Length: 67
Image 1 (cartoon, one colour):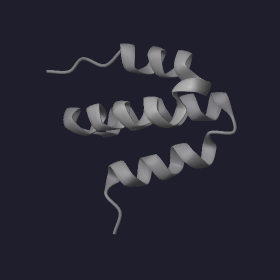
Image 2 (cartoon, one colour):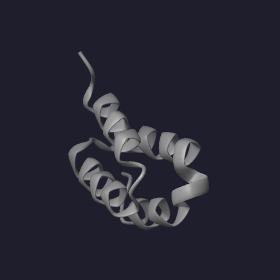
Image 3 (cartoon, one colour):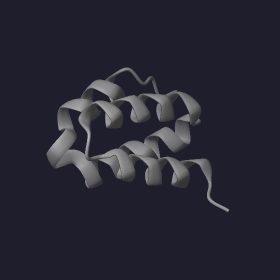
């Protein structure tokens, strides 16, 4: 069974063809995950989508407060 983080990664890959869908799903994912998982997701997203969606990633992750 997939962890929530792995499931979210799958969803983001599937919607990565559409910027608005990607941003919507990423924002939703950030709300669902615990801070440790958000850090992992952030690292993964920049590696996978940093060249295409850097502005979206910067926008979504700039609102996250890691404690």
